[in-house]
Image (cartoon, rainbow, N blue to C red):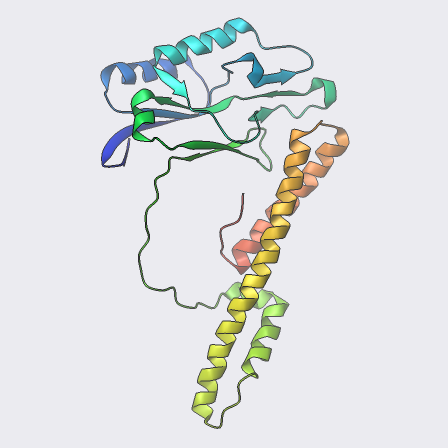
Amino acid sequence: MTQVHGGWWIFTVITKLSTILWELLRFINNNSSLPITSLGYFTEVLDVTEHSSCRRQRPMWQINMFKKIVIKCELMDIGFVGYPFTWCNNFISLFSSRARLDRCLVSKSWKILFLVVKVTHLSSNHSDHMGLLVDWGVQKKLQGKKKQFRFEDGWCLHKESKDFVVKSWNLVKVNDPDRQVFESVKQCCLGLLDWKRVVLAHFHKNLKDKQRRLKILQQGTITNGSKKKSVIIAKEIDRLREVNDVYFHSVTVQ
């Protein structure tokens, strides 16, 4: 259970559909008045349009059974933003199969509690499933003092940062030695912050471009060539994120 908006609600993470799990959800729904949300891998689709395969379609009896279970648990699907399928078997061409097996189901009382909610399908570097990002429109205002300048050890690994320090240190010239040190340190801080902004902007642009290329490959026709390219780009994205953790400790884009 978790608490938001001053009230409690039940949050369940689904890793694989099972009879025991659905019986538990039905039990919770019948014996609790708390709002419910279930997020994760349900192994089945709710409609034939949520499955794409050149070889065979999903049996209607399986789809209808899943629908009945969702109705019995008094849950509803809240939709999504992004690519329509969350899973792909990664087989080539005619053997390829895609489906929306991951979703967010909520009770009516939960939907009333969170009027503005959005589920986004996120591309994954290595998994055959996409990630789910749920934004229920609740933001906490962070209050505090202005963030102080902190020199990151990882910057020393970047040659350009050393050049910026030397250049910034020699920009200011004053007669007082003590004042000279103070002004030089101040100028170095400003120079490093400017350098970090420029480098981060280029870094995030490069990372976002690779993520876009990977997304196109994953959502397009799968071939041996596209699979090899996907592996290479996924490794490049991992490397960029590692570099980001070492140099900048910033939040990377999705």
